[in-house]
Length: 307
Ligand SMILES: Nc1nc2c(ncn2[C@@H]2O[C@H](COP(=O)(O)OP(=O)(O)OP(=O)(O)O)[C@@H](O)[C@H]2O)c(=O)[nH]1
Ligand SMILES: [Mg+2]
Image (cartoon, rainbow, N blue to C red; front, side, top):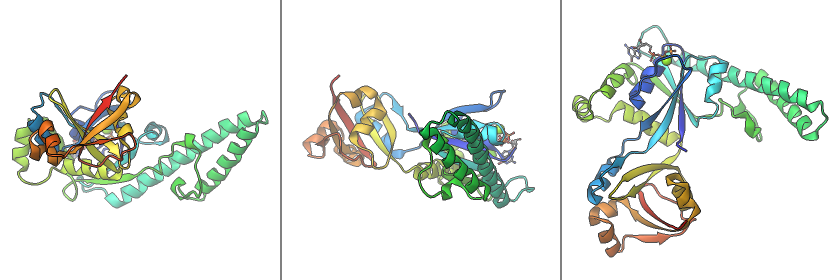
């Protein structure tokens, strides 16, 4: 399952424009939620693909969700995302981005408070049965509500939060000022519609502003990239830092995790320098690792499996 980022912001701040720029798909229409994939640019991938003569090249991607508007109910659609991209209007000249960020933090707080209150109502009803577990959850939710009503966030709660709660205020926030002082989303959305070569020509040397957004997202989620480099397909994958070879295998396919035997590992630059898998092996650059091996950024993995 790909990691997921939700886009939030005040009305007309440029949320759908960011969604379009990131995913190159439109976010219009009647639905309350649009989902797309944002590719993670990575120079290493093309160099690997060239060396192994890959027929297909697939970048890693993060899922992006654009919800229409704000308010507790709509923000509730974002309870399962891993991080929030906050779009702030810095282009119209009528807003103060720092103030809007504070407003948005408050909205998230209110959404979490409503969520806790609704859950408390439900659990309190069920707890009338006298079941100890429900009584305990009711008491915990009452303490949480008091904490929130004192103007504090769930991130400031000491101790464990009930796992079912899926709070918004504990998610990492990535603020983006939309405008000349930050990222010009209207321009990025236009560039996203151009063929990649033309967009690159327009940009010249500098890193794409959008690339910067994706980089911040990857950093915030603490992700690393590993590769699979085959002739049929060469592909980049993301993984939480500290994950094992077994978890990496599961990211590629559940069969690879189920039937995991061993894993050949070569660093991407060693593979490129050697000029191919066989050459890298002959040069002693390839090693065999087991399921508990902690995958490093830039590793090329070939999982040996048996199902
Ligand atoms: N000049 C300028 N206009 C922008 C920029 N970003 C967005 N806009 C315009 O602002 C308007 C709102 O942009 P959207 O991306 O639809 O904003 P939104 O946050 O999705 O709006 P809602 O979903 O209605 O809350 C559109 O007319 C955009 O063309 C920008 O960077 N510069
Ligand atoms: Mg929108």
